[in-house]
Amino acid sequence: MTTSKGSAHYALALLTLVVLLNFLDRQIVAILAEPIKRDLNLTDSQVGLMAGLSFALLYTTLGIPLAWLADRWRRPQIIAISIALWSAMTVLCGMAGNFFQLFLARVGVGVGEAGSGPASHSLLSDLFPPERRAGAFGVYGLGIPVGAFVAYAGGGWIVENFDWRTAFVLAGAPGLIVAALVALTLKEPRRQAGSAPAPAPPPGALRALAQKSTYWHLVAGATLVAFVAYGFASFYGAFFVRIHGMGYGELGVALGVMVGISGALGAWLGGVVADRARKRAVGAVLAIPGIILIAAAPFFLAGLYIEEKYASIALLAAPTIAATFYYGPTFSSVQGLALPHTRAMAAAVFVFISSLIGMGLGPVFAGALSDTFAAQAFAQVDARAFADACALALGEGRAAGCAAAEASAIRSAIVTLSFFNLWAAAHFLLAARTLRRDLADEQAV
Image (tube, rainbow, N blue to C red; front, side, top):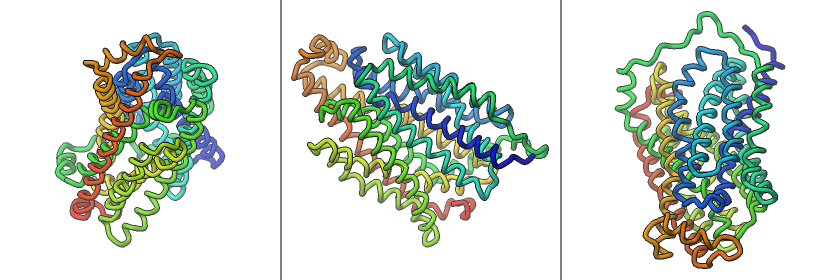
């Protein structure tokens, strides 16, 4: 069955709006984390659990079965249900009265978002022929940095002029309208009769993949980059508010512009450079992301210690570029390492591990480190004791000692976290040495 060009472009525009809302509702918690912490008297460890693990817990584990469902059921309906669920749960985040309620609402956001991506990717692949598919996915991918910009800039303005609860409600509400639009107007392009889903890959083929050291170096490298990126992103607000005293509106716009532009630039450059590098040396495809991570490390540290707030944000653009540069080289290499009938599973396992550990545990690690450093600086036995001791000093009478301890602690935590990028770089460089040997299909790189 053929699909008209107009219908395909409409679907692309609508799905780009969907992924924009996806990242808006996912990332807005980063700019709201600090006021949430103050209002609910949370520790940084609890902030990390709420921002990272709660979302990743079911987002990662449900990705594979929901991808299986997308191959067998109406994809517009899956997408519509997913949008409605994560949007409603985002609204519920704004109604949470304690940490447990907020944690569960964020779990619900992750459940909803788990169903959108696989179905959207599958739908676009059917709507656009191979020669136009990369361009379609490029347009679709623009929703990610734009969504992040709206999350930071819009969320910062709303929390400064209203409160964090209003920000969650206003972020989630539009998704309920878009869900209805998807359900009512997005058509399912029926597959050809002979294009039934491929059978599950045999265990023997997956065992062959597991024996390729390059694959596991890539999994480790990507996981560590995500560990740092999501760990820092969850405490962007905490760092710039505590260290530089920035207002949320000002911070939201500055962060949104930096993350949106540098993140998109890194992903684009990674693909372009990898395509050119592979013509000269296969291993260079993976060596370059490792070198970029090492080169960005001094900028990362300088951005954390420099006293001028806008210079700090500008310097942090370098590690943000490095954090997205590896996308193209890594995912194309993963496909080249796998046999044709194991490629979907290779990608699914890759995303499962890197998202669960990187997205789920990175924020928890950063928050726990911050709590430990703060408690030590304030001579408290643990994070809860420190939070309780400082809770009575909130607002105008906030103790200078509490503020100083928290500011020093979040900086020390992120500095510690930043060194994991060097560990990631080592894995990319090791993968570069064995890539040619392990490739199942060199043309797929």
